[in-house]
Length: 481
Image (tube, rainbow, N blue to C red):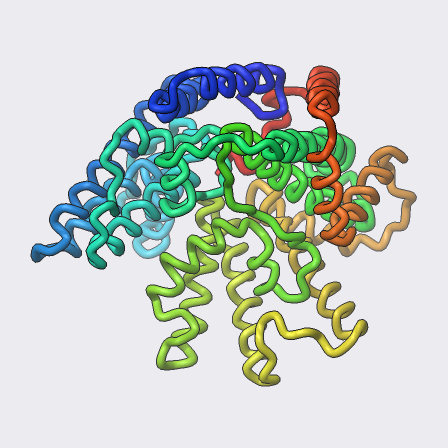
């Protein structure tokens, strides 16, 4: 069930009506059941995986909270985390690693019999990376809180925990929420504030506009035709396609996040923001403080800091920590060499950023000395991000090399894209670089409108979905992760 379909626009109001129409004590069960239904609508075969993750995380949290004072805490925590990682490893990484192992053995010992490992060859459960990382964070947080003597570290209600783990607005593509961000709200079940409805409808409408009017338009008219056969296009056309894909993936993913946050607000629940105008960044390090914030914060808190972060006793350890963190971010996105290279490139760029900051004494967030300093840093950062997106879109390194080689084609030909495609591309980027205060004022103005205006906006969205949506063919990009 995709957000930008009529199925969801019928499903969401029904769940909201049941949620607010039934007694308060029934609301966690409503969220749990509706979220499992939402996930099962993709494929009933996915549900056992989700149920397994729920039971392991919930039971593991209770186990760690109860036995944290006894010896052997490390192996208990490790065992629970490994059990949670097993489905992700099995579905997402086993085939890739098995193929790599076979290739390595063949290279090291060409005369011996070839190694043949079994393959999973099963569809990847939708959103498995997102809900796995959410369950890992929960277990780690419970362990940390229990060690500090927090008696309420673990959630005792299986129903409430299921609602936390499967909350359908953010289930398949985030934001990745922490225990402290969502569980207290599910326990308190706050009443709906008047302006939350307007704010929720506004975010849903904004997300739909990003998805249907920008991301899908540039995808169909520019990105897909170019990447389906790069040899047919000139260097300038390939570059325009890369700009278009960079805009597409942002509007697609941030549009999903807008709809997730807006949907959650209709239940009186606030989800964390996931984007902060990432293409305005003037360094790669700043880019990751603006892009997919909940993933960046996750790897920072559970990988980078435990490794020592920037406080490691040796400089080389800090650079090691940065590289490991970015490699994990890269491979989190997909089991392929493309994403391994993607993480490596971003890790190297962050290491260079850190080296430059140490050399100049400039700290993250310090103001730049002038407009020229901002301009060249922004241009360099933006085009690094654009070029690295080749690894996201290409199916393998061979295709990525084909696109890179094509960019050097000196043939000049007027780009063969429609005026509508160019208009959407330009307006999409222009809206991204508008002052943030404009968006804040627009949301505040919409919230002040009469509820009939909200109903009218929702009706317009339904009409747009009916006329423009193409369903599964243009699913959200991050569903594959």
